[in-house]
Amino acid sequence: MKVLFRGETKYHNLQVTQINRIRTLYSGNGWAREQSSINIDNLREHLFDYSMLAIRGLSFVPNPSRILIIGLGGGVVPREARFLYPEAIIDIIEIDEKIIDVAKKYFFFEEDENMKVHKGDAFIITQEMKYKYDFIMVDAFLTNYIPFPLMSSEFIEIISKLVTDDSVISVNCCSCHPSFNSHLNTYYSVFGDNIYRVDGHRNPNCTALYVCKGKTLIPSKMDITEEIGKAKIMKLYGK
Image (tube, rainbow, N blue to C red; front, top):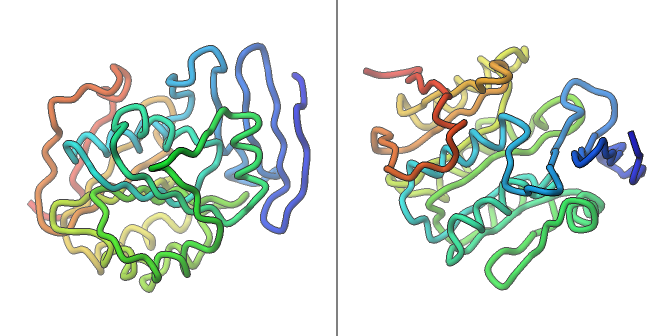
C-alpha cells in the first residue's frame, strides 16, 4: 500500500492510499472512515455500494436539469452525474476545503461551468438557496457518521423546500447504525409515507433512502450499471 497524502483539518484526519490501481480516501479511524474509492483505470466503476445507490436514485428522475449534492468526498457521485447528464446544473456543498483539494488532486474531480462546489456548512447554505432541485443527494459523513445537524428535522424541513412533488432526495446512511431508525422516522415526519429503502448488495448495511413529496417512485428505463439492478427496493411506509 502506498500512502499518497496525509493531513489534518478542523473536520477530518485525512489519508489517501493506493493499492495497485485502487485509490481510497479515508477519514480518521472511525466507524465511517472509508469515504471514497476509485479505480484509476476506470473512473466509472463503483467500488462502494453507496455511490451505486446514489446514482440508482437518479433513475427515478428522467432528465434532471438541476442536481444538488451535499458532501463531496472524492467526487465519485458528482462525476458520474455529470457523465450521465452533461447539460445539468450540479451544485455541491462541502464544508472542508481540504476535501475539495484532495478530490481534485487525487480523485480526478473537476468543476466546470455548470458544476460548482460551494464551500461551507450545508445547514446554512441550503437556507440561502433560491432554486428547486430535481434531485438532491445527501451524502455528508464525518469519521463516525452523519453530522447530527444534518439528521435533524430542521435540516430536513429546509431541504423539503428545495424540491417539487416530482423531485427525489437520496440519503446515504447505514441501517446498522444506532441512529438509523430515528433518522428514517424524521424523514417520515417531514415527507410522509413516500420513503423507499435500498440496501447494498455487497454491503447490506450500506443503505439509501429515496424520499419524495408527491409521487410513487417508478424507475425509468435507463440502465445505469448492471450491478445496480441487483439492489432490492423496499417501500418502508405506505401501501
